[in-house]
Image (cartoon, rainbow, N blue to C red; front, top):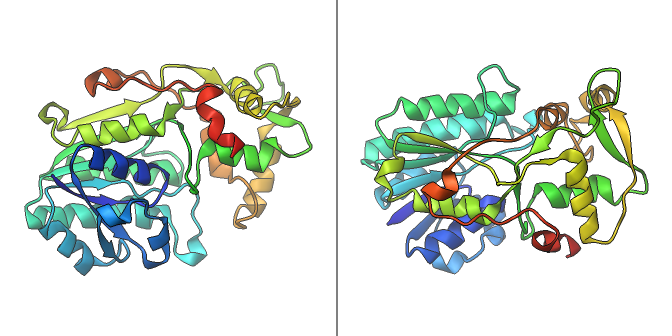
Length: 306
């Protein structure tokens, strides 16, 4: 199968390309000119140079493919630079759906996120309305909603390595965030971390799986761990016994509101809100796609020593 991949140079995208090639599919990848060097295995892909706004380029892609994977995602927006959730999470999906329908391409797989909702923060809302648009299309769609994804970032952005760099290696205690006035439950919000390889396998295996059409799948690992346990596991990889301290989230959120327009500030107010919500799910997705999940443990986090 020839597959149009949007978002192939990012963290998950590079692993999706691996799995497409392993399954003898042909990746057709849209790559922004400035990101051409980030495309792993470019020699095995059909590369289209352009932006998600370039309708003529996308039309050319759709003429030559049998299915679409839309994996473009943004964790942080910079509105003054035109880098927004609206543009990448929603308008890009809308454009590719329209052009896929016009070209007669039926299969479409969308990367969404666990916890999306209409009344959420902009990250969550734009992904949610993109889901609704896809569901109301004529395409044979499947939607995936991963939780916290971990794995070797290969030079891109990944949660655990970013957490280590921005917080855990600093000579200060790690914060155990809590809401309200009292810290009894500091750091108790939970996650089901899922390995990036497992996510990529689910995406690729769904392409030719008719029983997955018209379904939304949550993808989370089988372990449920708290924020406090997450910090302990990550720091154990590089031999640290990190001090932790309860931290009222409203103080950090206030700082973030003032400073998150600057790229150097490590977290946005919206990211803190999502963090405090936790990120867990209950799913039979691994059984559905015959995937043996990779555990979240120090052995599988050794890339943090790189």
